[in-house]
Amino acid sequence: MTDNIFNRIEIEIKRTYYTFDRYKADATFALIYHKEPLSIEELGSFVRISDKFVKIDDNHYFINFAFTTQEGTFKACQNLLMGMDNFFGSNTTCIAIDNFDTSKKPAMVYNRLMQILKEIQRSSYSRIEDENILNMI
Image (cartoon, rainbow, N blue to C red):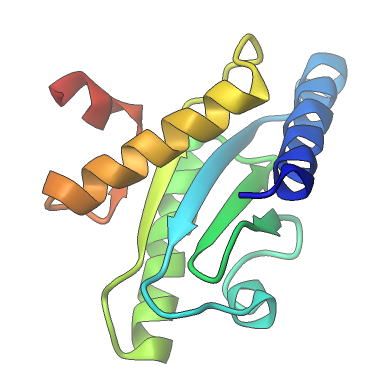
């Protein structure tokens, strides 16, 4: 990942922390992996207009589910997976979700999401996981 991309993710996380501190607006961060290259337009057709995402590379996207609790994000991710599975005719997509905690630095958020994603790909039966998968390591 380039510095420019990480800076965009860092700004998105800091902006979300500010919004939470000021307005108590919920949000949840996620990282999506899709085996085949996934364009911005394709992903954009599966998420809500209020959700923000940053392309990391052809297969990974950071997503900010704005105004959404972790429980709501899980449901949104289920819908996202179903839509992508039907559209692409495959089930190679997986999504990592991290709990929202304003004390976490942006690098920590990103690293935890990557770690969750790696655990999903390595050993999980589910394609959507949160930080609880890290407790099983």
